[in-house]
Length: 116
Image (cartoon, rainbow, N blue to C red; front, side, top):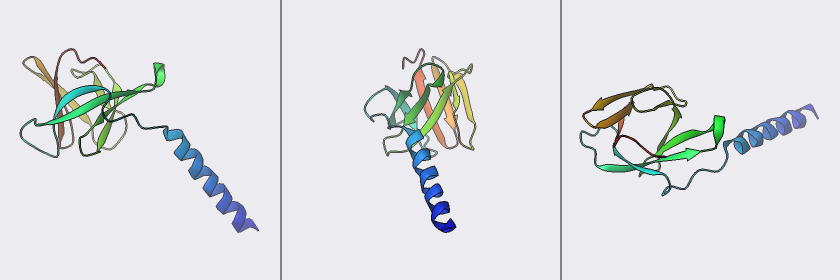
């Protein structure tokens, strides 16, 4: 009987965790951003910056054309964003009139200001 209770509790915890994720934003919403993914030299792709949530709990998702993504949080950086979660730190800098945000092997570039 105890085994059934533990399994039921585990299942309940899993369902609650999945429910907290919320629906994913649509891929063709948000602001278009040039991207160079997986170490590419040139910015050839078109990613999309999508705002998720409202108010204090809002964060952003940088959607990749292949379905990958990066979660970002607003911050006082040249890009205006930092990594929201994950092991890789975001770095950002200005290149002329452009802002570049890099996380791991992925880079994103846009002109200021970037409207969400």
